[in-house]
Image 1 (cartoon, rainbow, N blue to C red):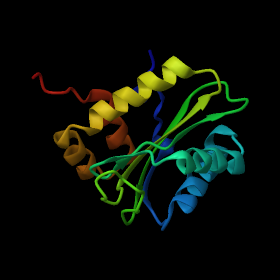
Image 2 (cartoon, rainbow, N blue to C red):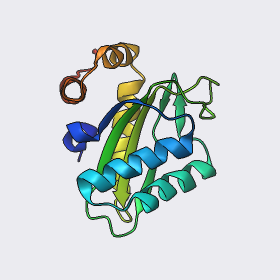
Image 3 (spheres, helix red, strand yellow):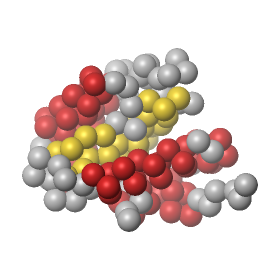
Length: 154
């Protein structure tokens, strides 16, 4: 089963994004996916916006996982985005979002998609992980954290 650490590349880690709303965030993700992976910007932004219109993908604690199925996509792509300023995102706790993990999956990647989402949720429920992530200022540092983080045994 794939994990976020397997698919998150340094070029897909976007820090200090100057965006003020979800549409601008999704457009920035689309531009990045077009530049690095040859995916068309508009369909990427649209699929993320359409999914968000169904209900917020915010988990609370400043975290959201916008995701969507993209027609013609052959492999799962991920991005991590940290906007310059937290964005209102209809989170269940009412807090704005500081950490966005974006997943774009092929139309038929159901189990893979759900497994990656569960893994991301597990990481971000750990306040120590969120604190360590916010201390990172470089895409390579962030990727390394996602790859090496070990949850504390209960």
